[in-house]
Picture 1 (cartoon, rainbow, N blue to C red):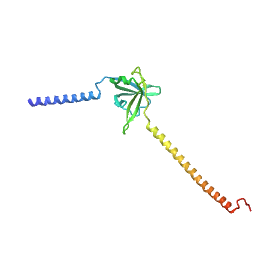
Picture 2 (cartoon, rainbow, N blue to C red; picture 1 turned 120 degrees about the horizontal axis):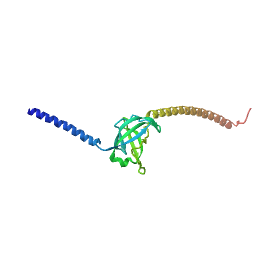
Picture 3 (tube, rainbow, N blue to C red; picture 1 turned 180 degrees about the vertical axis):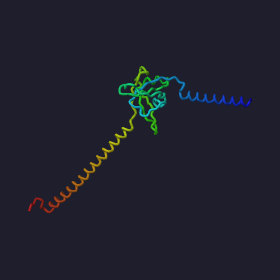
Picture 4 (cartoon, rainbow, N blue to C red; picture 1 turned 60 degrees about the vertical axis):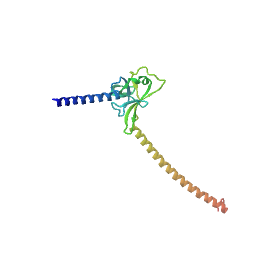
Amino acid sequence: MLKKMIAGLFFLLCILLIVGVAFIIGLEKGFTEPKISMTVLFKKVGGLSLGAPVRLSGVNVGTVSDIDFLNEELEGRGVKVVLSLYARYKKQLHKTVNIAIITEGVLGDKIVELSTHPKFNRADLSQIIIGEDPLDVQSLAETFGEAALALLETSKRIDVIIKDLKSISISSKRLLNRIEQRIIEGNLFKLF
């Protein structure tokens, strides 16, 4: 009976320890901290996922809590992203002027980056904000490819021009040598 009580007590302590660790991690990650929501509209989110960090000047100020499509586009934007932001940053969030999805790190994780301006003050954080779309790497790569092909074609044309100039230079040199020779011989203007 004593062994069963010790085993039960040990089991109960383990459960309490697990709950305590989860609670401490939750406090550290801000799960229990008061939050406010901000809705941002984008054309594309470029791989942004739920739970992605939201940063203001490099400081984590919240997470992405929802990503959904709009029934009707608003100002050309069809994707709604809801940001869950810590209420303690409310003063700084009122100064938010720009919200963009950026790529972070080597693996290309997407995060939401907020920019502020000291003279700007958004009256209502609950109003919908138009965000900047992420950089489309595919279209950027296509543009670079097209530019590289255009440079290659230009390089080929320059090579042809240089070869023509070299040929003209050689012909001009021969002509000048002949004229010089006739001047030396004194028969430059003699026809017969």
